[in-house]
Image (tube, rainbow, N blue to C red; front, side):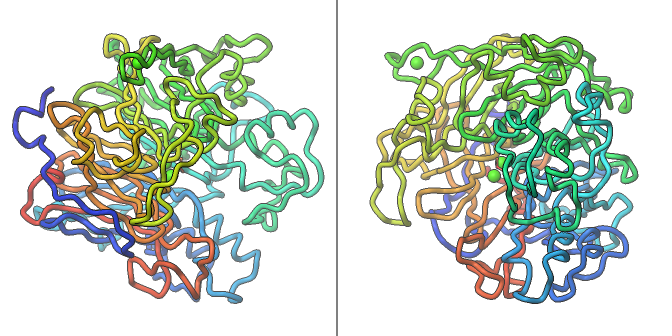
Length: 593
Ligand code: FEO
Ligand code: CA
Ligand code: CA
Ligand code: CA
């Protein structure tokens, strides 16, 4: 493997022990700092953050809440860049002093606190430290749950969807295209709708398959108080205008963002793009819910490196596939086998009897049900390793495996072990509680092919639990890891994993693991995030000098209130603020190495 011979590919960082600290904890020799936090000014004219003077207008120009997917794309030199992230959701119980705001104002601020941000950032000296550009930036932009989107691809012509949609919300992971646009997945969209009366009979089966309410319901945020399209009795088709992959051009702040229907409608974790052997585009897609599927899109057109705009419609024409996994038996001591990408539809022709192209895209779960695809344990981030060409997928957990969903070789655990608290004994539970990392090799290393090989590279959990597996590495020398969510790679092809929902009694974090060589499978914790936060990103910069981490929902515990938070990170106020940090090596070396 290229990159492993030169020495810098070794992961030599110290190991962060499992902990419950309300801070970012990093190895010795590293430093970290916050780049931007909830409420910081983004667009020109944004007021300074003041928790007692929040308005929808201010929030629409300030950094949103609960930063999740994070990407950094270059500007003209290596000193300036654009940080792009999405704001998955809001935690109203941690955002507003009790009694100070009325329900409609809270709903309007919530709409503005969702979406995405584009923020110009500067390198500090020659280091791996980055900071928000003190002068603002002409690229700076907020996209919210009310921003206008163009809907593109085959389902835009369908009356259920239409050519225009407003806002993006519930966004989870994402990816960057070779032409420098950002893709982001609309994930838990179903929880944003109210139903004041009934919903049309013809939509009920579809709504149920996606967890969209069909009977009288008040959602947690009640956005229908201020915008009737969130009441499915009044505007039932609004549910069909979300659950898509969105594409944003961070280099053109005036551009209208797109919803790309050819990538199907699901609880999209994200979309990550690679180039096929013949120069087309492939995108890997996870549908993050228990028992849902892994999908792949392959474009008809080829990527044009010389003409950026020639790529702008590449995601509208092609073929959408779903994955079927076949095990080769467990006598070999491995959970592995072969697989098949089953075509569901092209932009012109559906392969599913009784479903049109638009039907397949809008109700892609139903189409996948019909072809016997493999029900997975919550497929989250899926990404191609640029060094070895393999695809790595985080399957975060599935408490219903072995119950609602039968075990198979790709989803083998009907029981697994958790720790109720740090240091407590392991407890056996039903289902797959700690998740897997799946490693997949496309036939001929070509993302356009329809056959693949797969193996479970990691069976996560505490190494003391017998079911865990760390790529065959010595389990006495690895960090416990639970609920992998997002994956990334450094320049040497080492895998970086962030976690969400650790059930081993400690904070979530970021972990590194070599995927090749004698240390393949040696998972080491690189960082932990503050109390009750989820570790998002992770992102290692192109020059390997910086690791970016998005700290999502610090202090999000059931009993937490604004006045009694369970975290105050980043310790600028008496309440928590989701924020994005950068981590670098004090000696200027490559992170991880
Ligand atoms: Fe937003 Fe799939 O986690
Ligand atoms: Ca096997
Ligand atoms: Ca995720
Ligand atoms: Ca997550």
